Length: 392
Image (cartoon, rainbow, N blue to C red):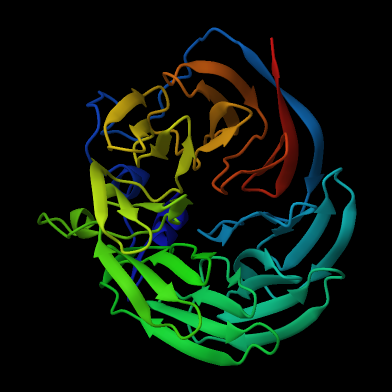
């Protein structure tokens, strides 16, 4: 446990704390619960089952995330699933679970990004590696001289890399040559991780450890706009951590973003004008559906917030201290996975639990993805599962 704590919160020097609760369970708004201030997971509750989870296929890739706090995520190109594991394996599967290729690289800290025929990962020494999506061959590698803890993203001609030292770097997609750099001065104490940039219509949307959401021109790295979504406050060091580690969520003309020890915000995408805010603390990605924005906070509460005005629709507290994954809307329901490998299915209408299945013996901290009517889940130990939901 102590090893996982050391790698969850980092500064210019790694910090070691004595209990996981100190790292993950800082009090940050939401409904008060007797278990919120302990590290004891809330026991699972009974529910009226309305859907069942069906396993379509599974595959195993190496060691998965490994013992450190890496960010090895899933990616897809709507025809294939790409996945990486900590010891350097990167693999491509088709949607039926057949292995198309598997390649070995140096030990990895982040990945996978995919787009325009290129797959990207980053190794533990700060090298960004571009891979041919068709056959798994290495195209190039570039040392960005910093840890990279989020999957590099691939634009039409630029690979976007967010480094742990506060830089966003634009690399030429064909050669890896650096085109531009945008940087901030990071705080001394931060969460171990960074937001994964989102690239849309020539703009990079991403968050930083100083509590700011930014829009950056992908052509030259110029700042288009930047907005604070958290301000450091309080006396304790943990209370002053304000990282934006969750990727921004873009829906139509709005961008939604959330921070640790801060707020969930809605902004106008074109100008960054704030539309509303909702107080909460998270480092997990957001989801959208049923005219709601969904988020899980650092205690394990699940929130549904009205996407138009920021009003709370409902709050589910059945998963306190279960270290939830990011939520995902799938097949008309809202799903989260927990640190014991349970996949929970909730109604989008009121948050009631309608289904549950244990899909792994370990946790799931990788954001789940869906293609058509299939959900893909990657466990912390490298189990890739393809799942469907069936109504009873």
